[in-house]
Image (cartoon, rainbow, N blue to C red; front, side, top):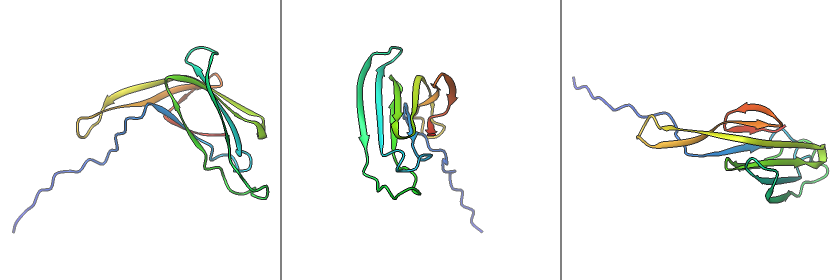
Length: 129
């Protein structure tokens, strides 16, 4: 009888991503057809950039959820405005943490916490609303 020993394969995915991923999947597509994203210099109210995202959605589409997403850099503060539902989300104090990947020896950076409308949130992914 012959025995074979196979090295254990690392099952942990280790990604270097210092951005906060914001998903709009909680919104119906028709409600997130127009979204404004405003970038501020971190810790200030000074606008660095802004963008309007306008998606063509059939007025009769009241069932499908939005597939829109946005990566927000931890180097800035952000405001997301969804005018059709009169909602604003202010993202500030986006903090990251770094570490060593358990497999392969690489390093990673990920969002550890942030403030959303003045309330502390944890994690690197957020689904609105």
